[in-house]
Image 1 (cartoon, rainbow, N blue to C red):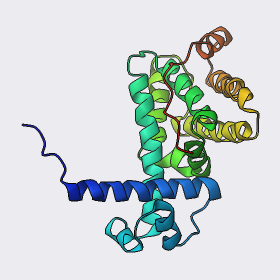
Image 2 (image 1 turned 180 degrees about the vertical axis):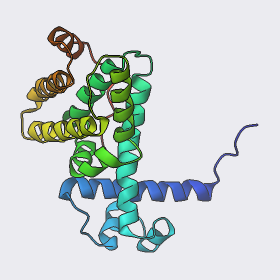
Image 3 (image 1 turned 45 degrees about the vertical axis):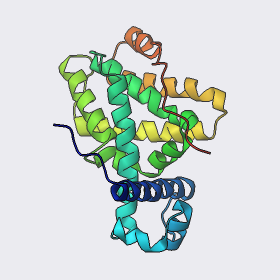
Length: 215
């Protein structure tokens, strides 16, 4: 039995909620904080001030939802893109290569991630969950040498965010090379032989990238 299609009211509510989340992501990406009024948020979203509390009880709840949506959407995209790859080390490396490249391909999402360091490490959604799974699978398969997965995840997140900051200040045509240098360093840190490091990071990336963000 097929699900009931959403009503016009439900579609309108979803559009309003989506507009608020996208406005929050844009504000957070540009400012690095969320020290703005609800009026400023609703104006940026082009929705009525009175509708805010129909969707979120507070600004902090909206920011949490905005960060979660951004990280989970990207993680789900990576999951779908790499679903047919059996080698967990390749999944891990390719995911990291594509994520650093967000500085070039999706700058707003990149800035949200760069400003949300803790979410990349401890959140029960998005990259933290997927990266932990890939690290554990690669270690179990003998591809990585990992003493403590929490430390490995922290090192990965730290390298990822730091490299994204480096790339943000670099010329656009330098981003890909910088991203791959970072991934090679992380693979070496996990004990992978040099020849295999070079081979994995030289693999062609999937041709499909996230769709361009609105200007």
